[in-house]
Image 1 (cartoon, rainbow, N blue to C red):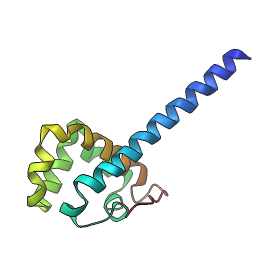
Image 2 (cartoon, rainbow, N blue to C red):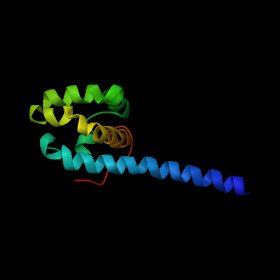
Image 3 (cartoon, one colour):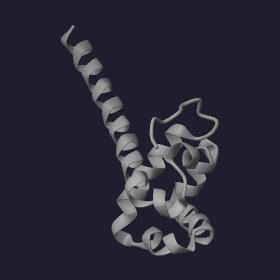
Length: 109
């Protein structure tokens, strides 16, 4: 019985940690890129499918930096700033959770 409780507690912890990254990514997007990209988090996440977001955020988010740096030249410095690498990974978690084919809708402006 104790073993089962430990397993359930571990699973609950993993789910909450994963959700925390999604929330952290949502906040990072709103704070760092919303004004630069001119769209709220819902519209931003719906720009690609989950699979497309996975590709854009693979290999250190190189595809994301390239695509969004070209589309939004004023944001290019922010995108390429090494201090934002952690934020980009969190934003990747956010958009993969809420991609246009995920069936999930974020509650953000």
